[in-house]
Length: 418
Ligand SMILES: Cc1cc2nc3c(=O)[nH]c(=O)nc-3n(C[C@H](O)[C@H](O)[C@H](O)COP(=O)(O)OP(=O)(O)OC[C@H]3O[C@@H](n4cnc5c(N)ncnc54)[C@H](O)[C@@H]3O)c2cc1C
Image (cartoon, rainbow, N blue to C red; front, side, top):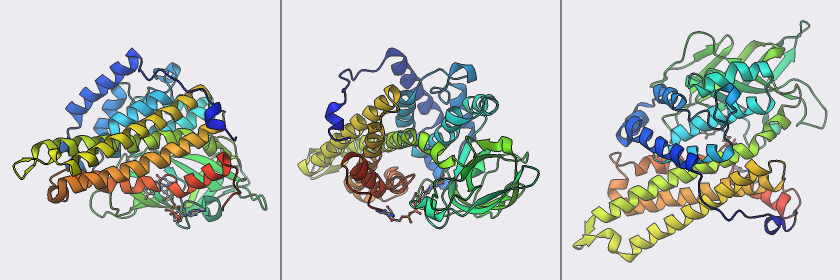
């Protein structure tokens, strides 16, 4: 692995194809019409996820951009996913998160290791905007040491079905999801915790999608599954839940991937997840810069716009520079994943991208708050939302400390530190 980065061929053409430019133009117009900032602020205040916007994203072909045509997609790849996520997340990172859970955790997992039947059943619905997914992996005992913390079990019965019990935490978007991607232990392999895990696809029963407003408790997803909303600092538009599984009946047909190989199945979509997460941070930071820059042109002090003070201009220049670097590493990771997904160095670059973009976006929101000062602290402006929403992305879906551990171990050849 040593020398990996210099060994790698660096693409020198930074241009976008005409198709991709058109797709982004269309998405920008879509956002102006369907998701103006005032609406996003209202949804944030009301803890409301706009299911109709998700549906329209499907109708515009945005949700199918990275899926094969046979399922209704347009045959693109992770580069399209990255560009779309970046644009959606500019001003609206909660929709970027929905894209992460729906397209990445749900759709991409099914595309990579689902059966033909599962692909034919789920992918066209997702692509059309009629379906969404949530991921129930993390447990109350901890997300970083997930293999140590995971206690959920699905026990095989004499008739070949399974009965699942357990507790999950932070399952995001479950209230507007049609399918929960649930990970449980089905088999014990002594001394090898990564083995014996299985992924199940659990569909909501036909009681329909539910809006969670206020503090409604113990919503029902299907027989045996109830969920309870977590009050959190940011991303109010896409709520997160504690989920309880009590004697949930599952069948073999609901297994996604291979029984007992769930952990390895999850690893297959990990790079994709990190790159899409980087794109959310990138879009969030870009939106933050645009608003802070505009404010600095309009707000006056000592008879001139505050942007004319070097102290303010430098903050904006630092934001712009870090965003450009974020864009470079995110696009590079996407390009590597699209062109050579089996190359082990993709995981390193994708981890660097996730870590760098989230830290950079975190700093951008802080700088923007300083530039807007008092008004930035009010709910009237959008910067406070970006400031709250970025907090989770430095530790979810993977903490930046674990990204650093991975880079140290895999790229630099240091001993595993945990
Ligand atoms: C808003 C939100 C949405 C989420 N959505 C989902 C979802 O949809 N589905 C899902 O399954 N999960 C979800 N998560 C869970 C998320 O993936 C976890 O929060 C994340 O993995 C971190 O786990 P933890 O919070 O338990 O922190 P912990 O694992 O308890 O870690 C605490 C601290 O210790 C550090 N640490 C631990 N071990 C090491 C080590 N070896 N080296 C260095 N530092 C270490 C961590 O980096 C962190 O700083 C979400 C979380 C949040 C907050």
